[in-house]
Length: 505
Image 1: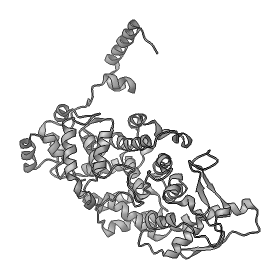
Image 2 (image 1 turned 45 degrees about the vertical axis):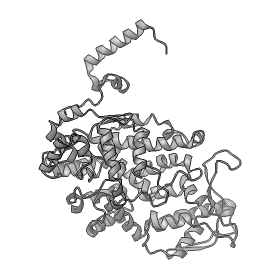
Image 3 (image 1 turned 120 degrees about the vertical axis):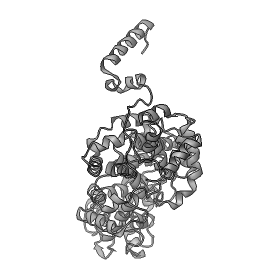
Image 4 (image 1 turned 180 degrees about the vertical axis):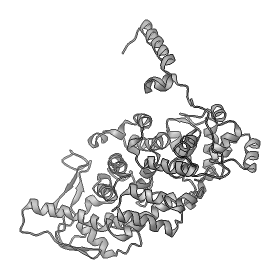
């Protein structure tokens, strides 16, 4: 659209009048970005306690850290900090009721994340990978649905796929959207089935080449092994090598159309081929799965062959070891690297009773005394550290490649882990990232990262001065030693962002 100078001035004058009439916060988002000063905020009350209170705890543990004013806003949800924290968690367990318009708008710049499967193959894989990583960080920083984003990260690790393998370069975009994000707070059996039939997973763990045209052929056991060892029962879940092979037999025949495979259309489509399926009887974890009769029509036999996948998933999701394995991992993520047995038992019971309802399982976890009491004991992984630093400082960021480079140097860039077990949760593997954390803290505090800006003066003033700023960053009042270090360092913000207390949650 071409505007004359007179028309431009008329539009500008009208917008200015609108601005003075309704205020920045009521403008359309597109105009708000033009008229609202960066980092505009309001004075807020930092955490007033000497130690981490329940509100600071849930903002650090069930979210990617507080933004300026979040602590005060959450405190208003209940008469006591305990009640407010509980109310916040309940809000987060129902993300569909939270307005997340700002985050979704911020993610729209990454157009490939919303594209249909067929169109993704028109793009260079580097662009797709960059937009996946930047989209994940953007949502972690901007989203109101913080627990949902935390669980997206959790399941992305649990069902890890390395996009560098084959067509995963293009298919992982759909897996992230249709498998992980769609089911992150849903029912675990639905999530597991979606993952099992994900084109990206069929590529990554070789399900697409798991064929058995005759008895002499050996099925490919890669996915079957990881299904039992990582996705459901766990390494010590009681299965045997025979169970692995029997599961692999059940899953023969599933494939996905490849980019370089004739007839070169409907790339990424998942198909079942009866001619490549093992139609004999199987036994999985002590349960018999009948063979496919030969005297039925092709369609009937094909249907029975496909159903073997659902029968396997039913067996493994209802197995007691699956509930314990998943509950242990959830407690490790939300409570402690070495989760207390009592908490694991409570969460396992909830998972079992609700048949894998993820929200109900998390609700039971958050109700344990272990979750409420163990505060500030977990070391933030690099992605969580950087996301929390951007959130707590109120940074305006485009989640650009310079920040992604810091994540890559720390070994925690999203969607980059090469093996099926996903990025580790315990602290030990991440202790070697401390130098790069300090480098990042210094660079971001001095606004030396392109596309990211912190208004330090406004942040300090809104939090009530240096003491309030430290309390906001640490989630509690600073100690005398922390206060002295802050003032004597000459780089107080960077020092607080790299302080042991900030690096823990």
